[in-house]
Length: 223
Image (cartoon, rainbow, N blue to C red; front, side, top):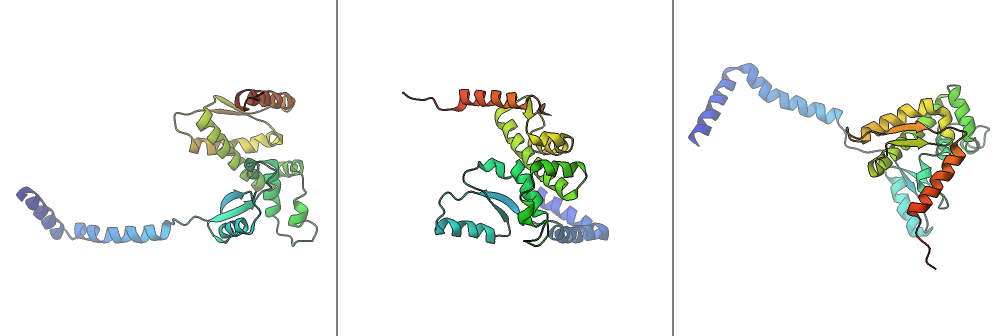
């Protein structure tokens, strides 16, 4: 105990004698607190969540409205006859993102209700032309696609993952975003090669995937 007291006394004596050390010990923590309070924020806002209301009752509507009233969430209502994973990373999601990017009043030509009917192929054509709204919509789809691929890579650990669909037409813009998201979410040791499928082989590839999934994941029928 006496050694500890002697060590503390020595340190305090050195700090008092050197005014620079004393100022550093007293002022630096205050400056750090001010910087952290101004630069850091733990508030989460505009977090997208997909909601499928299978109940349709007043209780479920009130529950969804509670999420809509929060600044932390952005509720995406999705039809019950569609799979939830299509809400953020699909052709329909890109069409919705492109419609949300428009600011034309409702009812006029080019309004959100009108833009919702723009096909995904036209959005890809606009991306090739450098349209900023179409590029942002495709970037959001690629970001969520990367999140889904990272989840698959974590659970199944494939060596190669083939992406099929119309999105491969703009693969030179989609691939960097997908690869960056996958790298951030996977461990340093995990590695996966993500390639775009050939447009001519996609129908046969989809049929092969469907057969494999049916063989390994569909419940057996009981006679």
